Image (tube, rainbow, N blue to C red; front, side, top):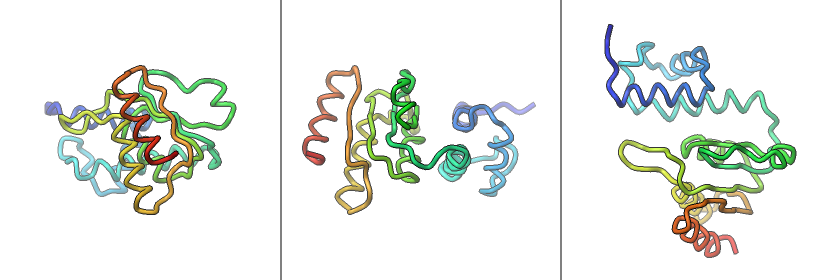
Length: 167
């Protein structure tokens, strides 16, 4: 029996989380991106393609007319937003992929997402700065951006950025 490194274990757990625990979907995505079937032999270069494939697969079974995107790792999508046609993303990676694949009219961001890229925490502010980069380069971004974070410092920093680029 081989033992996974912490990085490999985290990556496999992330794939499974993105696929809602569907190991067959993870394996299908890995085959699509020519990743060895043994997760021990994977490397991070394949991660984005695999996650993109999983998210596309999940979204292909859902309506393509989502109104908004709720980004939060702890708070579930409020029922009134579900009824209004919103989607949710608990991680930085899933949020960015959904924002890249779909044209949402609104996005609501939490600051602290409990999501890491290596040793760096990826926050709602990082998503916001990714959106700013798209906006200044003439790419589509949701016309309305909100913050619902309980982190007062992160919330203020994000709101100032929204005011600068969206108001």
